[in-house]
Image (cartoon, rainbow, N blue to C red):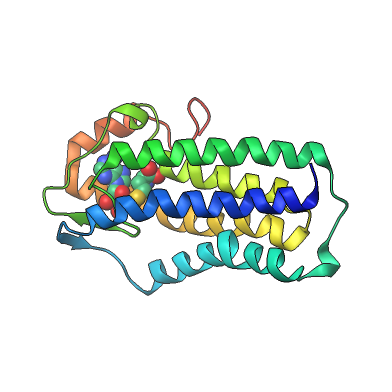
Length: 194
Ligand code: SAH
């Protein structure tokens, strides 16, 4: 394991992620949106998350900026990053498959939106966000730079904590008791813990 292979792993993670999302986004975009809670706050959160998970780490890989925040590379840490990256991709694919067309990049509901409570959604309410957390942890392990490495945790963390309550509120308003019951039987992102 070398720093270059670790960086390449991050780039492959980003490409794999995009490939999975592109396919599903294309299909769900065909269904009209019937409820849209997207606003300035939601767009800002999306931008912060994109900067932390994508723009900053890719800038670091391309230019080594910001060099002052580098710390020594440790192969074991990078191998751990590879494991988290693989887990993130597998989980991301599973969540997209389970949600099917009932997906949107933001707080939206589509026509005939169905509440998904099976498969990977049986025990966790936000497994796609779990996959994003895994990406953020993989990034911190793969990039030995305090800024570029941890930007994902900070960036996605901001989106997650700023959005998850509103998303659940939107689901409660739409699906009522079905979602309330579903909430009582599930964890948010990590089974048995949170
Ligand atoms: N929070 C989920 C989904 C993220 S995508 C996860 O982490 O897995 C965000 C959109 O998915 C929301 O706008 C909502 O429309 C939809 N959504 C969230 N949970 C859902 C569920 N259990 N069933 C169907 N759609 C859901």
